[in-house]
Amino acid sequence: MRGTERAAIVRVMTSTDTLFVFDLDGTLYDTSSSFLPTMNAVYREYAVEPPSDDTLLGLVGEPFPSFVDWLIAQGFSLDKSVLARRIAELEFAAIPKRGRLYPGVPETLAALRERGARLALCTNGDIHYAGLILDTFGLSPLFDRISTHSDGSGAKTERLRGLILSDGCSRCVMVGDRYNDMQAGQANGCTTVGAGYGFPRPGELDEADLVIEQFSDLLTFPEPVRVGLERDLESAAGIPCDDCRDSLDRDRLADRLLE
Image (tube, rainbow, N blue to C red; front, side, top):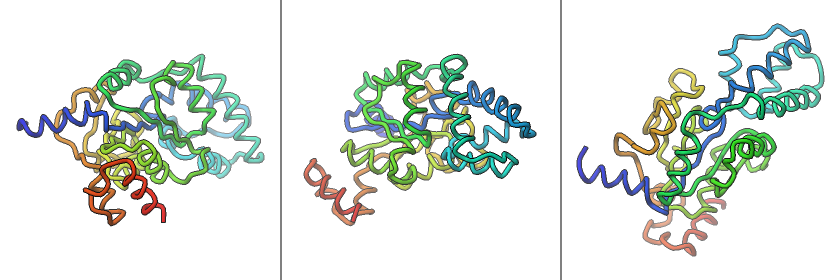
């Protein structure tokens, strides 16, 4: 690695202008620890033949309403709202008892903050689910911003854009394990980091700038990664990059993007 490349990585990892945005399921939280026991109980309770664990885990990261629609198509005959409520009841009971984070998550998040980075969460789970996990494992104080599916502000791509603009960062790293995390990061000019230890389907992380196999790898990027969020936003908004250096011009940039 050339010295200039190494310096670029250090700037990403230590700059106070860097925002790290994390997916939740399959990135911070090992969803299999509570989700599989919950779903096995649901299938037993309603006498529906369960699919394989791999099939269920392949749906982790999709918006919960889409997952419930999929369940109805598998043979659950009750109302979607009733099924969703029952799943939530069992899952919320299981998280404090069975749930677990991936190894090194609290320590790595704390180390990133110590280096000056800001942290945000962007998840397709709802605020109650995300809040329970963050509170159960003491992660809430580490995050500056949280965006969930229940915000009603669109798909993950749009919600990530909102986090970036509200934060005012000049560099952003999107970390997640599914295709929608990579799409959201790429669409917003972020460095994309794939969590290979999570629940990606084959090929979903092929376009990631970097794939990590354990969470703590975030502290030692092994290769140069794309930086310069402002340059990507410049292209999207048609505003010269030199014009969006301060907070006032960034507000103007946000207005242009939202037109």
